[in-house]
Length: 74
Image (cartoon, rainbow, N blue to C red):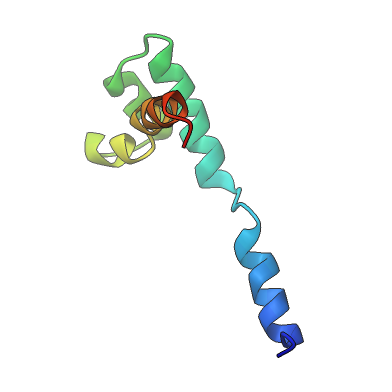
């Protein structure tokens, strides 16, 4: 059964990584924290009123998980 053009278009959109201002902000804050920056200063730089919001942008744990997966060849 052939795939419809709308299904093909949806599949193409789903396969593209979503890069926007939040992913760039997360990269910047994560790099800052990895290089010894403090959560309090990162919160101030991002103009967040709560440190919980700033923690949402911290991707250090995701990078550690990826490193662990690479060790077992997944």
